[in-house]
Length: 479
Image (cartoon, rainbow, N blue to C red; front, side, top):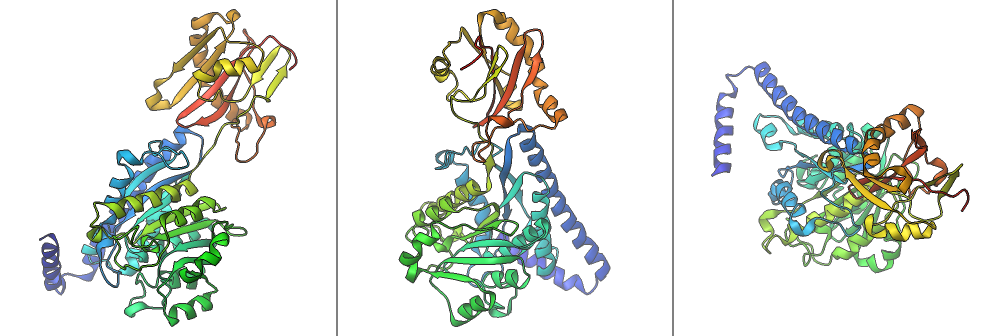
């Protein structure tokens, strides 16, 4: 009934179109587009501010839904996919990825909502302007550093405006890893230049990609192969996957370009794993095959999409929705980077009589005694002071010797410690210690926050949702 109603509205619009000045129509369309962009802009700004306030995120995945299905050559069900994927992402069984990243942490994943595709089309906007609106929406997300767009399709036609936006925003081409049963590189499939079967032809023509790797191909015509040769595409067909597996599971992309874009068409998977797609192609990748490729990819992933999930064909109790959600999980593992702490017992600084410990006490309280034993001392008191964790997400761990004055002293230090980041910023020093980049203690910053007690402090990074600052006074000169 809803579709019938929309068809009726469009019919009435067409009847009245001759009596409405073009200038008035264009003005109305412009207002619709501006309102749509404002919606994405404000949501992205809000989520960007939240992630920056929490601190520690180098890159954070942000969901952007593009419910577009009219460029499909067969079924248009992918337009209904974004809410179904979100539902599966946020279900209770899906709260943590295989790599241990917590979906509830905004530094890992945020959501800026959907581009209102149907509302834009209902106002009479053509596909040229619609594609530009999608591109502008993606750029608005990218403007809010450290957010990186993780796009929920939608049919595969959305990849063109998204990649275009990413390339233009970064100022150069990207490398693309494209997992699909089809090459989607036909010049103008069925006369539609924006067809979901032509998206990568538009990308390559525009110079938005330097290198395009297509994996999982098993439905390709002579035109698809000719187009692949024309654009220098690396096409890996399923018939030779066993031979190509080692190479594909050890990919290194993005050198010399602005980053890497990942595009996953759900039909790259064998229908045994994902039956809810418009174009079912037996003989595809297993889910673990895809995860191995994504997990082992060495790249700076700047954006990604998951497309062509069709809820109208997902007849096995939401099975394909969960598969699409899991694909998103592993794509945003590639997108998301939260600075980690330096683990180890060997970084103790000698500064007169003051020793600085800059490693995290893994597991916090349960490992404190073990860590102190390693240092040849033991804590007389351990106090965890929470500063409204729901807001500032901050815990101060204070390891205190008897001479420090106990709990009252700890409480008196809280205000001084809260200025630590500001003091680091004024000095122009990065206070984080990062494992992945191989950054050692030489970059650790020491701040005297209590001259009366000669106490030194250092922030040591992020462990899940907790920023830890270890404060420790030790009575030794050398270790």
